[in-house]
Amino acid sequence: MVGWKLWVLVLIGEYIHNLDPKKRLAIPAKMRKEIGDRAYLTRGLDSCLFLYPLQEWQKLAEKLTQLPAGRADNRNLQRMMLGGAVEVEMDALGRILVPDYLKAHAGLKQRVVIAGLYNHCEIWDEEKWNQYKATAEQHVDTIAEKLGELGMF
Image (cartoon, rainbow, N blue to C red; front, side, top):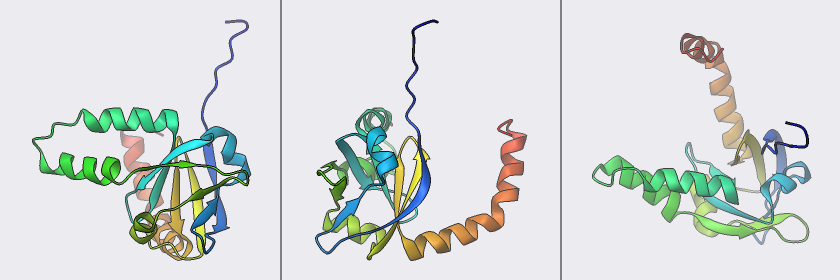
């Protein structure tokens, strides 16, 4: 296909930034273009926050709304992710505002880790991230073996 350029969203890397006293968080410069001016911030899993670019948020929201509402776990996930979401806009300095309820959910203090996970970012309190990462690293070989059995490696 001559002349076609496939644009793929790629958010990767681990960055440490400070949450300022006004609850503004600077998004790493390398991620700003992929995220765009508008994004969605919501409660994440494992006591972190998820930050989705608009097009990725729309895909996730569509999947979540298709879950059968008859199951309590589906309703809980919809409430947590969709009900807890807020649209955020980056200011001229590439910062987003983190609402109090999301800051509390993730236990964010001053130092924050922003981890790119290909199509979205996770936002962690630095201390919690370091604890989580230390535990996960102890089990990475076992996880890789299980994924190998599924044909992922």
